[in-house]
Length: 582
Image (cartoon, rainbow, N blue to C red):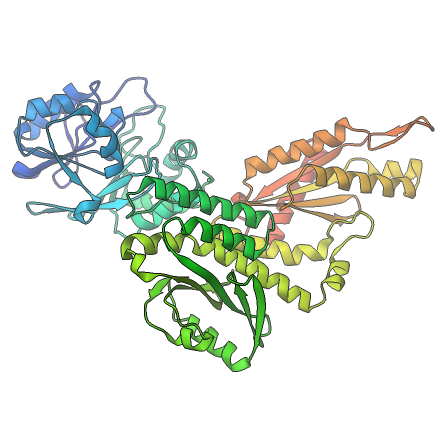
C-alpha cells in the first residue's frame, strides 16, 4: 500500500490524508469522487493540505469539489479551508456542518455557501449519492455528528472511534488491538458512558461495513461489532444533549436541572423535592401545572398516587383499577403528549392535556404512569418532546424510590431494619446485600451506571482478641465501622460482612474512583489510633487489606462481583497486608 497515493477504501471513497511523522494523533481526510459534486470530508490543517491537494488531483480536478463536510470547527479540520476556497474557485462551493460549529466558523468570514445539517433533514443528495448525518452530541462537542454514505455503508465518524496510535496504521489490525488505542482517546475526550452509549445507539441503527474516523485507524466490518460491544462498557460522566433545540440558554438550564435532579435523588431526598426542582426548571419555558404519578403497589392491590400539586400521597384501593392501569400503561412504549382525554385520563379521573410516559422497574415490568399536566399549545413536537423525555428517568427513579419506601412502611419498616442491621456496628448486615446490591446491579446494567465494591478485612484481628480480649475486639470493630462510614458518601452502603470483614457498596462509582475511596479508608485506619486511653496509657493501631471489584470486571451476577473483591482482598493479604488491590 503506497501512502503517497490516494487509497480507495470503498467504492469511489478515498483516503487522501497525510502521515504526520512522530504524531500519535493522526488526522485523516477523506474524499468522495462524485463527478462535479464531489465531497471532501474534514479537509484538514495547513500541515497536510499540500499533500491532500496533490492526491485529489490524481483522482479528479479540484473544481469538481462542491461540498466540504466539517464535522466540527477545530483547526485540524478547517485550517486549510481558506486555501481550498481559493484553489477550487467555485461560486457554489458549500460547507456542510452543524449550527453549533457554524457559530464559530462564521468568524473566518469565508465567502462560501452554508448547508446546516439540522435545517436540511440530516440528509444530502449529491447527484446519485445520498448521505445521511447522524447526531452524536457531546462526542466530543455539543454539535458533533457523523456522516453515513448509504451507497457503501461507510461511516465517517469524526472523533468517535478515533484512537491514539504509536505508529501510523491506516487500517486497524484487530478489534482487540484497536480497542486499546481507542479506549485511551475516548476516556480522555468523551464526557460520559451515558453520552457515549447514546451516540452508539444512533449509529447502530445503520448497517456498517466500514468506519472511517478522523483520527486513529479505519475499522473494517469484521471489527466493528466487537469494538462497539467493548465501548458500551467503557467508563468515560453528564447527560446527552438535545437533537432539535438551538436555544443554548434553554439547553444549559435544563441540563443543569437534570443534573440537580439526579443529585438530590442520590441524596435520598423525597419524590416531591425532586419533582418541584424539575417543575421549576421546566416552567422557565413551559407551563407545567403539576406532575402526577400512579403506581401499583407490591401486591397489585392498590394504586399509589403521588401528586406534586398537593404534595400528598394517596391510595386508590381498587384491584380492577390496578389491573386496568397496568394493562393500559403497557401500551405506552415511549412518552407522548395527549391533547384529548385518553383511557388513562378516564381511569385516573384526569381531564387536562398531559405528557404521559410509562414507569418500569429494573426488570422492565410496567408499574404505572406519570402525567405531566401542561399547556400543549406551547409544545413543539420534535424539539420539546425530546426535552420532556430527558426528565423521564429522574422522575421514574424518584417515583420508584418513593414507592419502595411506601411499600416498606406497609411491611413494618422497624422490623425490617432490625433484620438487616448488625447490632454491634450498626452497619447493615449480609441480608441487606440481597436487597440493595441486587437492585443496584440491575440498575447499573440497565442505565449503564458505575457500581463498585470494597471488601475490607482487619489485619491480624485474631491477635487483638487473643491479646486484649473480645470486649476490646468488639470496640475495634465498632471503631473501624465508624471510620469506614466517615470516609464514604451518604449514598454508599457499608455492610458488616462477617467477623472482621466489611463490604462497602459504591453506586455510580467506577473502578478508579472506588480504588481511591479504598486508599482513603486504608490510610485513615492506618494513620489513626483505633483505640486510645490516656489514663491507662493505652493505644491500639490497626491496618486493613482491601480488595476492589467493579461492574467493569464484567461479573455475571452479584455473587461473582463479591467473589472478585474477596479474591483481591486475600491477594492484598498475601502480598503483605495493609494495601489495596483493584
